[in-house]
Length: 322
Image (cartoon, rainbow, N blue to C red; front, side, top):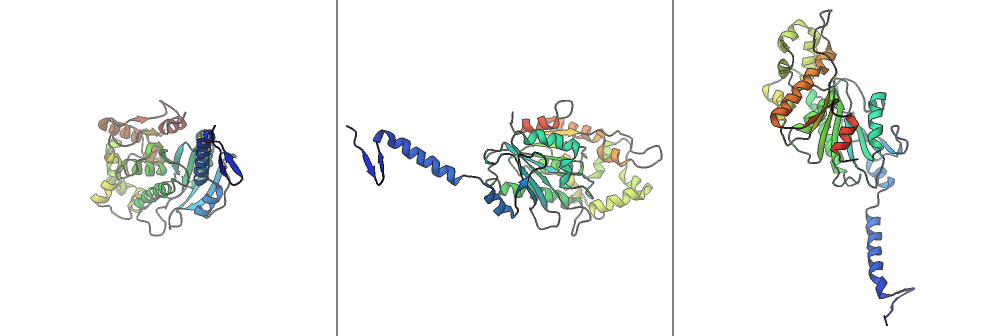
């Protein structure tokens, strides 16, 4: 006859003892790894609200990731217990405008709604402008992007991301931040893709002379004072070769980098019929995308675009979400 083990107020038959031990362990584990709003609110110092992308998601607005005035980000969490991955978004605006709230614009919100409904955490981040206090030019904005990624990596456990991947994304200037951080040194192992919309091919603008036929940046600066002013503000003076090399993310591309998605719609004629610079073309020409695709082919790096799949499908594919 099986002996009965007796505990105060509890009697357990031996054949149920193993089940009892396992259940107790699971209970302790679940308690240890429970994820709740209080933990997040305490860490971020902000009360949660409801996301404007998806009213079933948790929203943390203006979380500080650094000490500069524009070092703030928004976090949209559709599923804290078992998120499927992380998408980080950087807004556009030529490094002089735009805001993380651009994610709510009609075109972008339609993309991100499809992604968040699949259980992917979405973060939209601000970064320093060219005229921000103590700005070193575009490099400061790019490094702010790196700090966003580092901040979220440090909070990976809190967000319950564990071994989940990260996709970087952005429009125009934000696309450049994503490409620079995605290609430059393979620092972040979990980055699995880069979504770049209306991107530039490099932030060494002298490489643009290979993008546009007959384009010479120094000659154009002499002809167009507006371009010269933008150039000097972009680099905070005349850049040296070391800075230009650091900013040339297309030259950092190799087969170990994450695959990227590129979509540019502007034409190729930089000077319009009024003999003025068309900055939409200068910044967003399809020739920039062609240049990046050519570089990717040279180093055997995978890429995608609008003719292959939609932006949301690319993100979900990179995160392994079905």
